[in-house]
Amino acid sequence: MAGKSRMRPSFKKHTRRYRELIAPTKVLEGQKRLTKKRRYANRHG
Image (cartoon, rainbow, N blue to C red):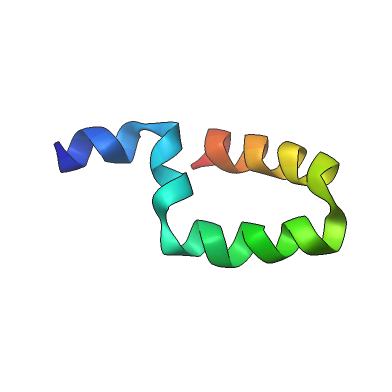
């Protein structure tokens, strides 16, 4: 099941990096830009 969760796009949200990188970005750049960045982050993996 570990392999499956890795392939899921939602898996990234539970990662420590996701919180460290995106949480502060949310505060600095705002939610609108965050949405764009999140989209690309998930696509490029």
